[in-house]
Image 1 (cartoon, one colour):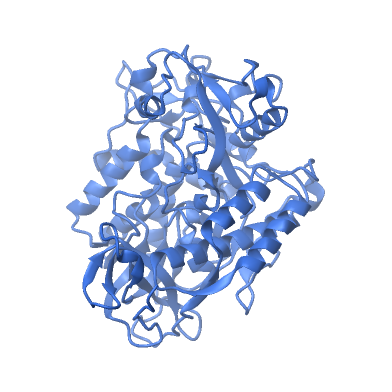
Image 2 (tube, one colour; image 1 turned 120 degrees about the vertical axis):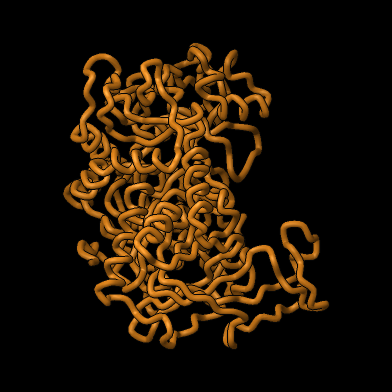
Amino acid sequence: MRPPVCDYQSKTGWEAEADVVVVGSGVAGLTAALRATELGLRVLVITKGRITDGNTRWAQGGVAVVLDDGADNAGGSDPIDTVDAHVADTLLAGSGLCDSEAVREVVTAGAAAVERLRRWGARFDTDDGGCLARAREGGHSAFRVIHAGGDATGAEVQRCLVTATKGEGLPVLERHVAVDVLTTATGAVCGVRVLATDLATDTTTGRTVDSATDSTADSVSVEPGIVRAKAVLLATGGHGQLYRATSNPELATGDGLALALRAGASAADLEFVQFHPTVLYTPGARGQRPLVTEAIRGEGAVLVDAAGEPVMHGVHPLGDLAPRDVVSAAITRRLASAPGGVDDHVFLDATGVPGFARRFPTVLAACLAAGVDSRREPIPVAPAAHFACGGVITDTHGRTEVTGLYAAGEVARTGLHGANRLASNSLLEGLVLGRRAAETVAADAESGKLTDPAVEFAMPSPVAPAAERSSLQRLMSRYAGIGRDADGLAVAGSALDVSITDIPLWTVEAVEDAALTLVARALLAAAAARTETRGCHVRTDHPDTDDRGWLRSQTIRLNPSGQPVLADPILEDVA
């Protein structure tokens, strides 16, 4: 490859200015951007793909919320669901590490958040009586998950928010990746450095090319730009691409978490990565896999192994609707004995679910594309990386400990999820906390807490350590997946250390690889230190839960040399 032309130590190619930069265009990011615009802030949204890309549109199940609209949302036994019941279900799923106040704040605000979304034009499914239709998913004690398009809730939420964003004329910088958060000498945020992901200048000819269509684009580099801003709000989603098989799109590379750590923020609960029990299994498949929503189990589908034996019988009182960490672990244990000679997948028998094609059109289409008619035969499924329960430490208003840096959605750790996320709480989180974060930015700007973006800033290093992506994914999948032990985590850490090289952050691939490497090292450190099994974190060498020693979160931050280190105790007040 020819040497790139951009020089990160010299003047950047272009500059822009906003009051707040929102990085990410999913449910949390666009909700925040719309609210910030309502409050009179100048907003710029930066998104790595198109505005319609990202994790939100892939969410199938729905929004978990307690609504008082007369629907029978407890399945007939008790017609009234309650906020207290939703809170209790969330706390139980979180295995002791949820912040109960954060859970109650988010759950209580859910009804208003959904109503706002409907006013923006979101269309949810209704029952025969005209009330919003409800589903029940794993870990829920009631039918409280509202949905759209059967199993296309995320796509409808994204459509609604994108339409509202365009209607407001809100500026969006598509196909740009945030490389660094810019900070002053005192550590306050004053902007962000960005790089185009698909428009670049050929270093030999000087012509402009589009890396999405031009075969020579792997030999080009991109001139960086600077967006000066009083505040940066991270809403970049998770880091499912740490693993070879995931429900997450290719964009989910942990960029926001890496940005925050390098800017001086702390993270927590990184060892807790939720593996969805059921993605569509196809032999040899890697990368993003089609999700098979657990709402299907809520309608009566049953997990069975290749010998036809129920997987969840006797495992948990909720059976096939147990929390995701329980179901994923049960599948993994069952596959270890290779029932029926099969050790890499089980089956979801949904042949008895009435109206399958109408209720689950997205799943049916994915199955048919793989040669499986889920109406007539069991669906081959396996666990895959799905959701990061931890992230950048924030309060329930989006503040981090870094002045001017905020976070919302999957990238943030508010204490809502604890050691395991309750199904369909993620869209709820984005709607509630995206709005709150925007309101906090406006309040902090009004009170004079934020820095003038015109000040001088320290230019971050143009290089960062990174490992080769496929090797990193192989290590994380083998040693830091559902079952972990001290030896495997040590092997993964050592192998990463010897394979890492410093690379220039001149391409989106380099930015992503550096982010994945930093997040992987932080996750491995946290997972090795937590010598117990809790929620999503399963230690085969420490199979018991140790409340006496480990009923607490672990904090990670970077030391002066840029290495992730444990920094307990967790910071409770970042306001």
